[in-house]
Length: 338
Image (tube, rainbow, N blue to C red):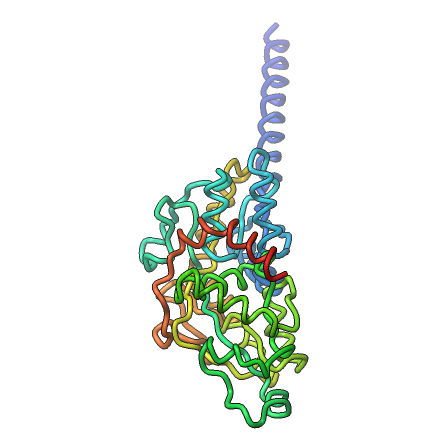
């Protein structure tokens, strides 16, 4: 009987041990994967996600697409999110997604030292780099086409009829870059004069691509003499040897590229970890080294050529107004311009 009891106890212990090992194996084999909808360029997204995984051990997968496409997807999936993170896009787009109930509130501990303009009042989005608009000039093409016209220095200078067909800007319906430009004119000039400006400029534009990165590339390759783009994109192309000059006109808009978490994220802790990492000085220095955007984290170092916010003449940009007007403004643009 004693032997039987011993055998029974041994078998029971082995069963417990086996269950414990199986449970531990299941725990260690499962690593939550953070899924990202990325508006920023693929090169930056790939570098960022690879470093995140290296630092945290959490795998990351991403889908790269335009702002309009991904924001609409986030809103459409709000009851069953297929991703955890929306990475990139100006603040007005994150405000729009939040208004539709698609974003989770999360205030990262790394956001406490960030400037107020980079932090959502309700904690649904946080800025990670500064976005400013400028005029890009392909100097060779400009000299060939307009040798007798001084290079543009202001937004009004772009309205010269001689520039017809030689300007490229993104389609505001698809791109946050161009919508920021539209709001730049509406807010600095007022609605009536702002629309007059936009409707006078539109016939001079030779192409309205959907991608926010397209104008800087098309100017760099000499397909157009002039373009409207984020300044950091223009600086990047110049650093790569393209014939691009950057002009920062007075009364421009400054905004932030943002990151937010989807409401109902299936990997909330991993998503929070990714937000924290993106706001770190290491991550922002990495991104700035690739795209030349100005980091929001005050401890992050800027690469040579990166334009500082202190050197720009910016209007007092009303982000909430831009978000509130978005549908109406884009509908009018689609009807009257394109």
